[in-house]
Each structure stands twice: as structure tokens, then as C-alpha cells.
Image 1 (spheres, rainbow, N blue to C red):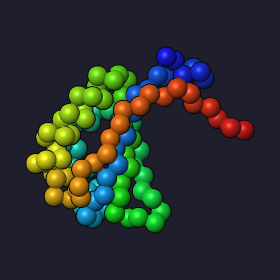
Image 2: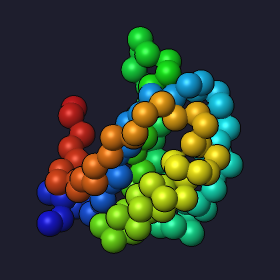
Image 3: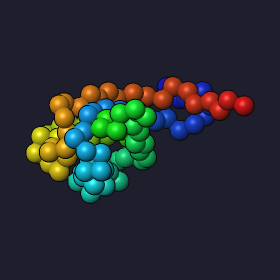
Image 4: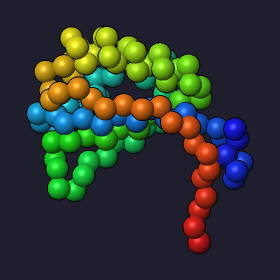
Length: 107
């Protein structure tokens, strides 16, 4: 389904999780252990609740659902369990893959 504004179709992998230390998590994220560009990530957004510095919300955009599913599988097996981010995560990350249905500027 194409977004109604003519914007490019986009699949987004949403990830939320508690971290032990945001600066430590950010260093692990910035090391890019799965090579985001080569894995099909087109852009990403990192967010945190204003009142919770130890919680991260991440959105990674892909052109295809397959690329998002593959990337998530690699995160789960190669990064979250034994990789650079494993020591900084608290519990199991919450994930979902969504599609952009509409993008509309409000004026």
C-alpha cells in the first residue's frame, strides 16, 4: 500500500528497551556491529522518554519488510544475546515491524 501523500513506502522496525546506561548503549549502537547501511537501514530515530533516561526507543526504516525481518533476526541472535549491546540491556527488548500508511504535514 502506498502512503497517501506520495511519500516513499517505508517499513519501520520499532525497538524499545531499558538500558543500564544510555551513554554506554549509545557507544555500542554507534559502533554499528551489524553494518546498518549494508543491512538496508535507510534512516533511524533514537528517542527517550523525558522522565526516563535509562529507556531507549529506536525506529529503523527499511525499503522492504524482508530487510527489516532479517535485521531483527540478526539483532536477536548476534547482538542482544552476545554482542556489544548485550551487557547494557536490561531484560528483553520489545519489537514490532510496522508500515507507513500515511505521512501528512499539518499546516
